Length: 453
Image (cartoon, rainbow, N blue to C red):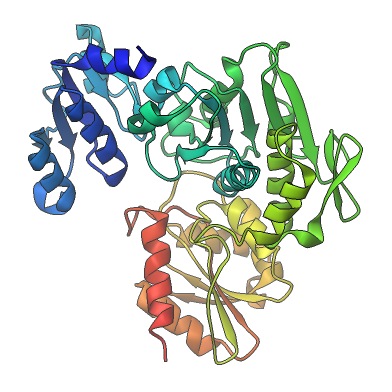
C-alpha cells in the first residue's frame, strides 16, 4: 500500500474538522469526505456569504459550523487549520491540550507526497519564480504539478503522483509557520518586512521562512539572494548545498553584462526575457539555480522567450487613446511597488493603497517622487503612503488625489492622463480592506478599465 492509501485507511470513520470553506479548501474537504471521514467544516462567514461553497458541503454530507462562535466546539480528533490562522489561537491551543492533532493541508501533503518537491518562498517574486520553474520542467518533458499558495491544494492528487514526478510549490510564511518538513530544492527569493499584522515581529516572519530549509537532508539544495541582506545573513546547516544568485556579480549565479551565468557558463541573455523588470531577472536567476542539472540551457532560453508573466503582475490591460493601463494588483507591499515602478522609464499615474499590514512605508517615498507624476490614493494605507512622500520634501512634484472607490480612482486617472501616459494599479498594500484577495481587486480594476469608452 502507498502512503496515501495508508492515510486514507487511517482517517476512515475519524472525526475531522476543516477550518475555512474557501475555494482552496474545497478539494481538501472533498478528499477527506471521499475517504470516509466524518468531516465538519467551520467558517466565520454565514451560508449566504459562502454561497456555492456551502452548497458543495451540503451535497457531500459535511456538517458545518458557521458564523460567530465557529471555533467554540473543536472536539474532533484531527483539525486542519487554514494557513492564515495562527497555531497559538486559544481555541486551537485548547484543542491541542485535549489531544487533538492540529495540522494543515500542506503539512500533510509533505508527509504523503511520493514525488520530488521544489518549493519557493520569499517576500517578493514567489509566484513568478514558482511558475517559471514549473514551466521550465514541463518544457523539459517532466511530469509536473503546481500548487501551494498558487493553483490549488494538491493533497487530493497525491494518489496520481509518481516518484519521478516534480511538484513545484509556492509557500507563504503562513504555510511555513508550523512546517516540520522541507523540500529537496528550496528557493528564498528575498526577505523584507511583511505580514507584520499577523506575525509577532519581523524575526518571527524570517523564522517561519527558514522552515523551508531547516529540515533538509544532506545534499539538498537551497537557492538564496546574495544581494538581499537578510537572505544573505541566514545561517544555513552544513549538510545543505547553498547556491547564491546576484545581479552584482556575487555567487554562482550572477549577471555578467546582459548575460546570466551559472558557475561561469553563459546561460541566458536577459534581453531574451519576455517579462519586464530587473526583479524578473532575479526571478530567472533563482529559477536557474533550482533547475540546475535538470533542464538544458536551450529549455531555459525557450521558457524566457515564451513566458508572458502571471496575471496581476505588470499586466497590460489595454491601450485607450494612447494611454496604457497596467494591472499590478499583486503589489501588496512597498517593496513590490518599488520594483514595479523601476520597470517604467516614464513617470506614471499610480493608484495605490489598501489594508495596513503593520509594515513600514518609509522606503516608498523617494521612488514615488522619482517615478510618479500623479498619485491616486485609496484605502487604509493612504496616509502612510502620503507621509512617506512628504518625508522626502518633494510633495510638490506629485499631484495627489484621494478616491473613495475604484471607479472613482480609474476615472480620476483617465481624466489626468494624456496620450503616451501609463496608468498603473500598484497598491503597495494588501487587498483585504475591500476585497477577498488581490485577484478580485485586479479583476475589478481590469473590468472598469475595459468598460471605459
